[in-house]
Image (tube, rainbow, N blue to C red; front, top):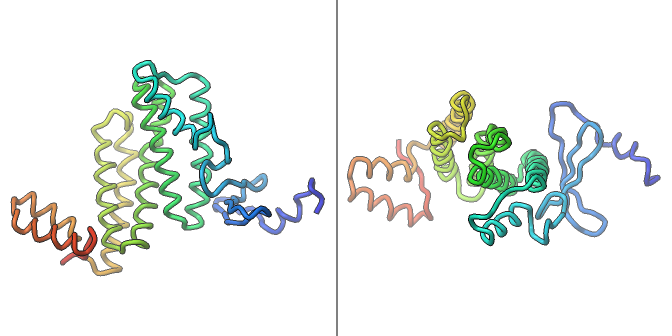
Amino acid sequence: MDPGDYDLLLDDWPYKSGVVSARQVMTRGGRPVVQVRVELGILQMELEGRPDGARPEGCDSYLDYLTKRRFAESDLFELSDEDRYEIDHEIAIYNQRRLGLMALRDFRRTAGDARHVLDLLLLIAEVLPEDEWMIAHLRYLPLVIFHHIQASAMEAIIRSGPEAAIDCLDEGKTQLESLYESPMSGEEGSEVIAPFIEQLDEMAEGLRSEFHIGRTLAEQLEEAIAKEQYELAAKIRDEMARRGGHGGGSG
């Protein structure tokens, strides 16, 4: 194929509006990459490390670079216009890869990319608490948290079973609910957050129904502690330790 002619390549993988089409392929050098079909062509991103393969300032990511710089500069740490540009760029490419990985059902890496974006958002919230640029970014905080919880729960099913996934969803719901009282959620926070919490509840109830799970051990432990039933709580902890941290629920 002519190196300047991509017609055959694009014809073999037609674009579908509203659908995230992704695939994992090996380069001629034997490197795994993720490709996502977009309207104007094909995006190719690294499977490991930063999606574009770059190492900003010799670091694994711009987040890594900012974290090291913040530690070194301490109270003098500030974000320049260049920093803001690089943060925007890194958020964009990690979001793009995250969508492709989710379509591929690579939940571990999806959760990792969501966590990366979340850490970037939290960093700028701490450094620039009143900045309009920061406030604009934090509108997406509930969505990023939801995606991280969703992917983490799916990975938990694979690695530890549905009980672990329900516990993950419970923890995520608590995390989202904490945003109700946080200024980071913005003026319309409740309207944005509530639908995500409802989706987490639906996912948890779906797992309980499909796998016939009542309360998980973690939920039973929380209830026992709330009722000050410490002997029962100790027994539940022992059972959780025996099962590796998660266990089936009772009705």
